[in-house]
Length: 209
Image (tube, rainbow, N blue to C red; front, side):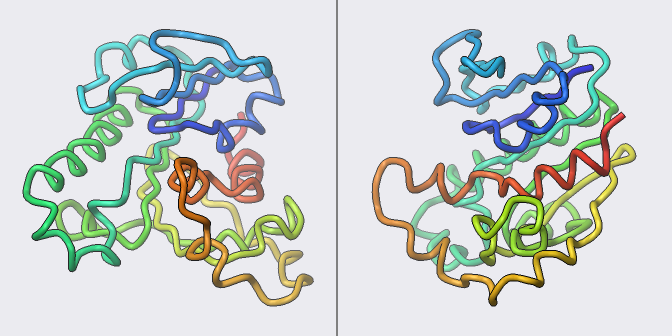
């Protein structure tokens, strides 16, 4: 069985599947061009995802999960006030990234999740199916995930949303500034967009086959 991640630089979302023996492929323009294998066995594909991936993605068989994290900068409601300055091309590209994810999901016909923050895609396409904060699943990974970041999910093909983790409530109140206070730098966007480890583990436990 295989798992696929689109717009996935870190591989955090698929790490539990990899550790369980699944073959995991993550696609992102930041990976080395072509196909490489990371030391932990994660298969990296350096691809420009502005082009459709339906043909190569459709070639994968026995896919247990498709996880997608398309860039949210030009779709998030929090940044909508700057959209006029970014121009229509930025919006067109952002929607195109999201469309690549939905088309891949339809092609593979496997359980999928597409994550974004509070997003204007709800207006352009449809409302999200679920939303969560990383702190809701902090019990799976310790205090590292005890922070807030409202994340919305568009899901389908039998994806099971994990129940909220009650153990996270044993921690002190969640850190509401973790995301906003990330230091400027080249890795800031990757840190902000990385999947929370606790939620990744919860998704694996709820959807493993």
